[in-house]
Amino acid sequence: MPYSHTKVVGPAGRYGTRYGMGLRRKVITIETKQRGIHRCPNCRSLVRLKRLAFGIWQCPKCGFTFAGGAWTPQTILGRTLTPEELKQVEAQKAKWRGVSQTPSE
Image (cartoon, rainbow, N blue to C red; front, side, top):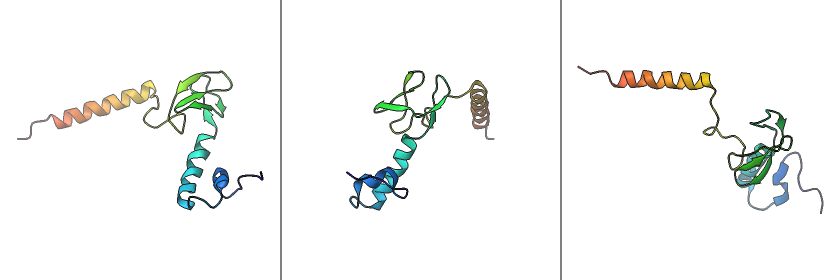
């Protein structure tokens, strides 16, 4: 079988002319993010993490297995906050609570 993708269509080249360009563009964006270089949450090295199953990822360098997103290892909602960021969030929550609990007379 010939080479299944080119520079333009990337990993969606294996579909040829089938399924329409809109769906193939979505495949291109998802698969390039999925197969890109990510940072391991354990050893902090930049590597291509291996996707073992739906949302299960493994670092090839240290062997650390962790749960992440379905298509990317770290999601926006699942991102771990640093202690400084957590303090900022708590301060913002306290500020909002103080504003919403003031009597409106």
